[in-house]
Amino acid sequence: MSKIGFIGLGIMGRPMAGHLLDAGHELVTVKRGTLDATLADKGMREVENPAAVAAEVEVIITMVPDTPDVEEVLFGEGGVTEGLRPGTLVIDMSSIAPLATQNFARCIHEAGGEYVDAPVSGGEGGAINAALTIMVGATQEGLERAMPILEVMGKTITHIGGHGAGQTCKVANQIVVALTIEAVAEGLLFASKAGADVGKVRESLLGGLAQSKILDVHGERMISRSFDPGFKVRLHQKDLNLALDGARSLNLALPGTANAQQLFQACAAHGGADWDHAGILRALEALADHEVGQE
Image (cartoon, rainbow, N blue to C red):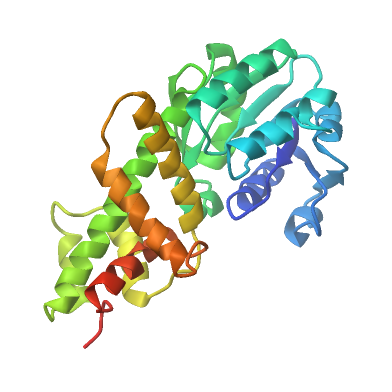
């Protein structure tokens, strides 16, 4: 069993850390307010800062919102590199910029550690059920060291390539997810405005070529109007910004991605930055002056 530092106990991080504790690993985190009672009961300890975490452990996992957050945790004042021990494995499971990831990996290597980027997909449900899809960018050595830990939290683990490749795959994932959520929302909105029973429409579509996990899970959210996150609009906005910034650097047009980003921005403008990303439906409903299920 490993002694692991886990930094980032949000909607996804809490259950992920819980699975590692259940598997017998010893976990340390940074003190941020009151530690979740379930994690505390399982033996998770708190220390002052990331440097103090690094001084105690052989593996560090970060699961924080954005690229600057990872940079601050790793390289800021009191950051991981101030306490990093030789050979420490650093696994970043956040969703951040691929090019920044390559730089972070180089800096961690120079500090004596091994770096793995391992962003995830599957949402809160995947985290709770230890069924996450994990996209890995790593050396072969890093992959082999990380795999026993990743297998505790995930179900589908794929080595995409070298450092940054995992994050590139995650950006592609977020493009597909955003456009599919938008497609489901448009389909259900069309059916509802035309007077059809959207529950039955969804049921029928789940049996045909339009079937998808997003139609299943988020289609149900839209019909029941359950927009508590899940995965927040503002975090999906962040991921699509990574996609659009990358597209500009590659001289690549991503018109569907840009449109989905505008719809998420409309959600945020209406106070919905913290809605579940299925809330993209509400931006479309505002344009249609019609709510799904409305008579």
